[in-house]
Image 1 (spheres, rainbow, N blue to C red):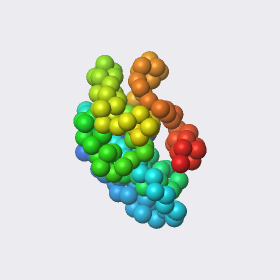
Image 2: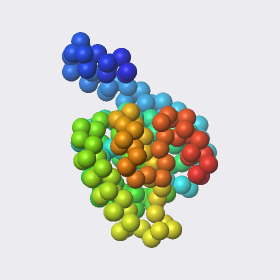
Image 3: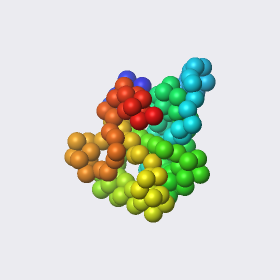
Image 4: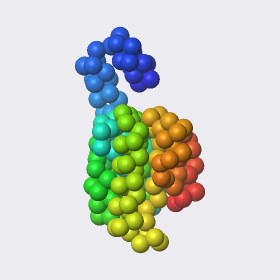
Length: 168
């Protein structure tokens, strides 16, 4: 997928070819996810991407990593409003929310959405019931990462797996 993305940014691959490659990889991730042997805990996690970020592959990969650790994890979609993410987390009694940042067109908008998400979490949960907020993704610049609120940042899936193993 790195190659597909690099070729797309250089204009050496058609958009339709990129979309087909992404679709095929999503289907592969879903297929592999169903084959993972795991002992399931009672802990739930939900995640996806915020409004304006339609990428799903990073979030689907996080879902698989969490499932490997035994969490009941669900990628709930892309380009989601903050309120929707928190509503789903509340309904599913999630102890962890993850947000994947694969595409940040406007860093100030990403910060605003992050603040909305955190404010909505504060309104919805008491401090002892508030889910942890984990973030990751290749669109998080060092300057954005300094300002964005989170409980955990994972620069790699391995870091994420370690965090979740210690968390659960």
